[in-house]
Amino acid sequence: MKTVNKENKIVVLGGGTGMPVLLRGLKKLPVQLSTIVTVADDGGSTGMIRKKLGTPAPGDIRNVIAALSNVDADLEKLFQYRFQIDNGLSGHALGNMVLVAMSSITGDFYSAIKKVSEMFRVKGNIYPVVNESVTLHAEMDDGTIISGESNIKFDKNRKIKRIFLTPYEVQPLPIIIQEILEADLVVISPGSLYTSILPNIIIPEIANALAETTSEVIYVCNIMTQSGETDYYKASDHVKAIYNHTHDNIIDSIIVHNEQIKEEILKNYKLENAFPVEYDKENLLQLGVQTIEDNIVDISKNVIRHNTNKIANLLFDRLNKKINF
Image (cartoon, rainbow, N blue to C red):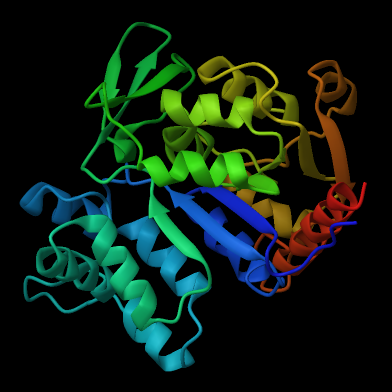
């Protein structure tokens, strides 16, 4: 009987701030780990670099390298250091510049990621979803097209109908498809649904691979709604949005938070129009999605984050059960 060991593979797709939180727990597991990261970000340091150099967005990749690194804490802080002084470098993260510089040395962005990953003793493989610069667009329900990840949001008068990438015929790295098809477990990380998660999986070849893989595909649902993206969304609405952009039934299971969060923690989020995502079990079951429910919130720093160790253990247990079934 096959058992969980270092040869078993977990593949994670995502981006934004939720993915690194998840990965810090997963890197402790005795498994092979591969990550597929969005490169559609165009805000902050990443946006400035993209405009000037035309490279894929390095910001989310930088955060994933930091999360999966196995180096001295001070070296990780150096990689994540953001210049504050107003001398032309203000706002730039050092790690972004390292990735861009290495890309010039190696000749392409993916090769740069591999080289920097070696330098920081990263666990597993990190893949940009594509090896070229892409732009994220949103078609709103009033027909308006908004271009640029940092500009995409909706208000009371309009909502996101669909998102898409240009160039239209952008191709993922071929090895990504192989990774998904050969995985023992595929995880869609938490994160901004329309601007961090969907930009990966709307690429047709990736959507098809998620539909074809024989491994379980688990979506780690967001804990809070996001103003301007997922206002009033229940857990099932997150799944429906993914299905509407890809294929029905590509998600086998969803990890959801199932306990109330203390009101004193929620009050600051309410000021930003962010509220707990409702766990609507019956609607999820009607969509054919199994539910994995637990208290997955970490409020130790008075902010709401996914509990990285709790989710890692849930995924490890799921992997163990599937392989030994």
